[in-house]
Image 1: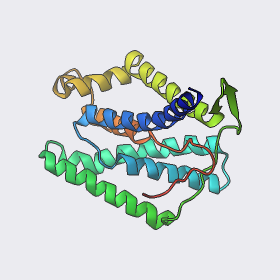
Image 2: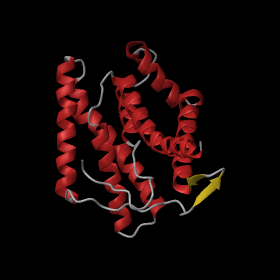
Image 3: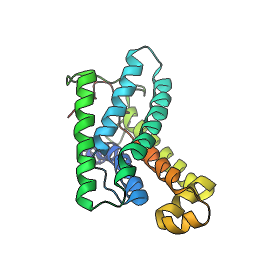
Image 4: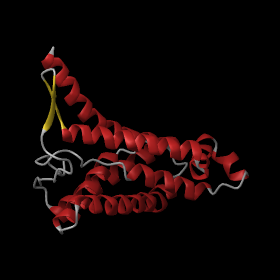
Length: 212
């Protein structure tokens, strides 16, 4: 039984990271109707940006904030420059564009940082909690806490702010949203920015941040 519970705990930690990536996919799909096949590569690129900031001597949490800002701006730029020109195009065209973005980001990361695996620092303390024969690492608890906090902040954004309500209106009916004065184009860009900065990189030291 203890072994089963141990696997459940470890699965929750890994699943939380995948859930955050899935959340980004859902956000972008809800706003644009596009399945972004490049989402994983964009997450990887953001992780490399954080790694580069830490390697340059910045504290981890400052590097995290800087990475979030750069990733958000990058997501908006991608929507304006790459996605906007093909809005309304056939589905196959949209698939080709996002797959092309996947290949480009993968190659760019390899060109900038090489394809060698790099260690990423663990922002959480070492050690683990022991209970009933089950060991829960502090890094796993940290990942769960960060994902839970992100979900809570997104709930507050979409339920209790004008920007969030505007984003929901655009996702539901862009034409009607435009008629009531919502700037649909910029709202879509915000949606891509929000989806862009969901990323990986909060696992323990020794975990790799590498180009697949």
